[in-house]
Image (tube, rainbow, N blue to C red; front, top):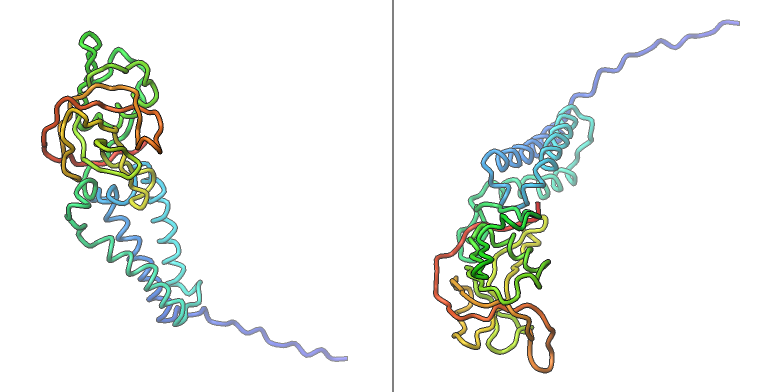
Length: 254
């Protein structure tokens, strides 16, 4: 009995196709744009600084995928190439474009990210004058003091508060009430929200919405909202209100 041996054939490595190379280029473009955001510091306009390690990890992963695409590990076709262009190239170009400087973005875009720290040493709280029962809140300490007063309200009732903030109104507030606050980012720019003190303007005029004001008032417990729909909370009864320059930067919890 004779056995016929089939000769072994060696197949040449697959050459990466043009579509694969284009897909790899799209991935590299995304990694480059994220890297430039980090180098220039502009990433803080989109996410909080605590997201930096995740962005670096994302760059490593995207570069690895780009190398795989260049070497034909992934099989690209017209559909995947269109998806790559839509999901990778367009966001990359948007990241690299200058951020709008319109009024709605001036509060946070391209500006500093200010961490809200937790200080337990009450003897060194910035701006606190226990003898005069007064708290002077600087622009950068706004987030810290908002958090401090919210957690220890009873300790500061009756104190005179001096603070700057941007005026906003809401249907949840009562007549002669408005909010003076800043911007808070929890994770990314999509969850950016305003937070601030509720101001009782019974002794002063209500300022123009979106204007920046310098307020002196007394911290009290009072009614927030209308007579029919309200809740008890902290209000700052304003005794003096004047316009002031806008403050840049947003706050985030470190």
